[in-house]
Length: 432
Image (cartoon, rainbow, N blue to C red; front, side):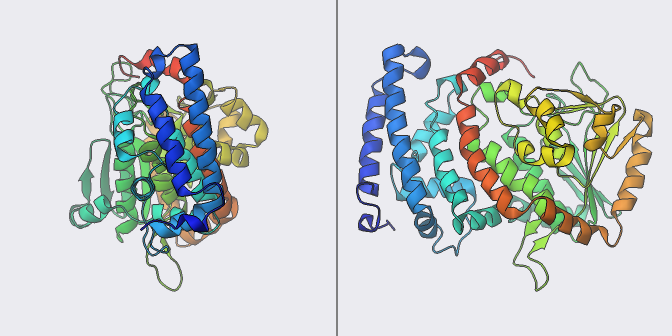
């Protein structure tokens, strides 16, 4: 199905957009790869990309609702963001990069890419901004994944699910998710996001689970061998090699499993709720860096070992720390949030400022006992209803949607910033 271009704004229809995209692509195809371009060639590429992106942004501003309605059959289907951008590429050449263009792009190191994910960011910003399409897409991302539905019978029967990045075990109503990428200190990549969303879905779908715990596993990494580590944040080696995609990592992470921890799993529901949610606890050993620290902002209870620390170095790395800019000021106040995000301040778990993010701090040897006690408190009858109401008040869905709409584009721009490419280049060889 193709939208009738006569219904669109004069001078900016799909045919004009497709033609302009072809001309920009032809120009780029005649140039060397981005790192090999001289100043004149870089200026020509920049001009071509600015032109087509201006048209795409204007088109999405005017037509996001009708494009989304078409791609979702009048909002009767619920495609996830990856499926949505692929459907848009097939239905309307030029609106977003084609599957072939994205496959070629994603095979390259970050510094050699054209930055076509920026065009996906323009498209998704338009959809998320739209008052009808945006909430529908957020709901679609809160639905259980096909992988989780396929694995659910096994997990319900055995209470155990072992994946590459996450181990999930259920015992006496408690689901424990253990981050187990011990070779890279639980640094985040697309595999971890997939495994984490699967695990979160299984926790929320299993009726015998009442409360969940996230903790880092014991490491084999030479610097932390034999010690537990929570999370080292984004895998900069993978970012340098071009393996941290905008859609399937940076956006899926925020709109998928992290948002499910906050809001719950979207189901067909009953008369009293469309969501299934449960209390969540995090236990921090050694450190929670970057994405690890971001995670702490959505948990109902955070416990930390007294020798651990927290940091959000995304600004010094050049990128946006997920939804931390949206959440951290609310939790800590704006001054500390700016010190952490803009200035890279590291917070030791045993300093007073940490208590704005962490609920309890105990000596490392007391972590296990403190975890058991905290989980028992979270298992109270009224906890679930109260955490649901608190999350609704603290993080209204409409405000989250507006933030994520802008994040979709701004993060896409950042991962192709010259400063970011220079900084992550040092991670091209060797683990984080």
